[in-house]
Length: 448
Image (cartoon, rainbow, N blue to C red; front, side, top):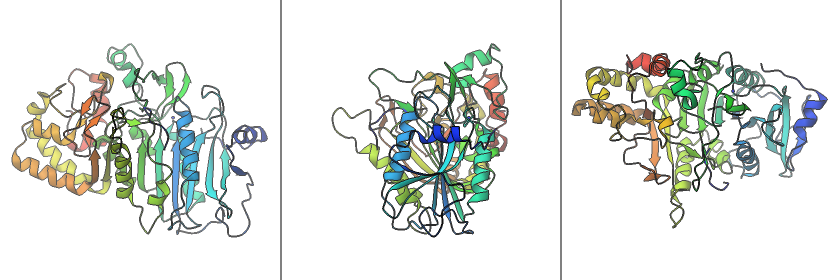
């Protein structure tokens, strides 16, 4: 891993200029630009192999102040150890912007496959290079990239990692301009289906503190960026995914998991922010490709143990992590239990508004939408029977969870059920109107 720091059409335009622009920064990779594919059986063979492949896509939206870190992540996964269970039919794909020069200058995003040749040299096999003005952080581009992957790499299992800035379920632009949106001073559509830049601030580093990853921010100008809403993201996925790994802040909420439950079986994510260190890309494939099933629990535990290992004086801020593995196929039972609890404890939940007595996962007031789901229920006055039913439902869907004792010395992590949730705020009409459209709220009635 790298040193610790805090971590949105599609035009298949393959031109000589675009290729040259993309290949000009290959960091010692060997590039295979042959659109006809390679000949013979080799680790990078493009020959279609029906239904026996495991395909893993890294969707990296690094056209922002995280660009250098995300670029290093890609280099790390290529240089990492090859797992014993990795088959030459298994596929690792990356969709990313080139990070040569300033990320504020137009750069063509590309989809490429990475593998090692028989001599162990990392190879980048470029499949598509797109127009430099393509918006990676848009549901259209996400859909077209995944459609290309589905149509050209038939597989028994698809997995995806999404890496960028993120603000969980909160609608695009609200974190930066929530007050202005509520006051009607900023136009609100809360839909990235027709993408347009929204307010975004990259001034996220506090002096003396590590940089954090805070989904889908593609910078276009000072204080403006493209972002995707989670409902648009879920609608854009054209096939069933075995798993999604979110290497981004605040994505570990029930709202996110429930929105994706029809298109994704399992999900790994964090309830708090994530250090720009992010996940361990050097060992990632050893968990995802070693055996008949990806070892997502082992992958999650490895993430936690890495950050928990910072135990020396001066490393207190680095010893900061939350992680959970959730089975999205079990979430309907949780929704049924929560619907009953929310209905009978509505006044108790309302009394908690803004309360720091409830376990929070945020440090800044601009992110005050993320609290521990179970602790909200407990503090609202739920009965012992309700808590028992809730715990049983959580046990079925949360397959692994872990948290350090603190997060950046600012949050005491005494309660961690593996899922965050919105603690409703009255008077926020625009935010609550968006929340009512989320599948979790439709199922549970948290916000009436």
